[in-house]
Length: 371
Image (cartoon, rainbow, N blue to C red; front, side):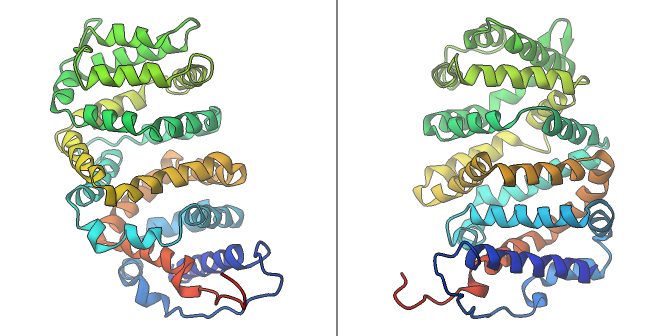
């Protein structure tokens, strides 16, 4: 397993150098690289210890049994592409103590672990791998790049993001969702029935955004903030001739590929399970984003989304890798090991190491006359 992982890391390193210093270099003559990397063991000791203790054997089996050499190469390419999409030094800032010590960031890792444990069944005693299978079907059967572009348009609007955070951080949302009563169904069943009704409505010709406002007005006061502001922004941002058809196609595709409403049930659980405490997390994220010094964290997400939105080869490679990883039986082997990696602190090591591979470990010296 060590040999396999170290080989992957070495190829990643080599690939990064080729991307940064190879055929695409602006310099005609090859530049001698100043190699300053120490042994891998010094950078990722926790991760390698987990390997030695056989705590990542499932990860090993997925890498060796499920990902062909071509897919492993594409996985490495996906990692390199993500690093390339970020401004130089971003990963250093993301993994720095000033960032990781902030309360909001401190809550994100446990939240991610709890969401993963929701899928494995450790959170509430029931596994939810079919949700992963639905996501896989959507990736395979739906045209998602227009959705990605629409998502970017929304996230690049600061007023929309601020209002969305207001809604998600509202403590009343959990109570409203939990107590829904729709068509004689309540709780989770009522929420799923209402959400499915919305998807059907959105997918129909002649649909208008105001129809959602009317329907949800039966359950929430859409005339008061933050909901009134949210719907005003949605009406402004969703263009009937461009954005709305994208939403309609996505709604139709979700209805076709999620016949058991697994995703809608997941959304209900995400909003209501006490152990996840979504409102508290988003309240902390609000405080995080209010600080101008933390703006780059949000920019990281946008930079990666932009890269995959405009780079078809990278997007298709990511889809091919995910199509394997998101198979239900593969996810059942992979997610428990991913939980171990996050809880042990090895994920921070790997992020830091990725940054070193992309920058400090192999900075080419500036050529004569270069900038």
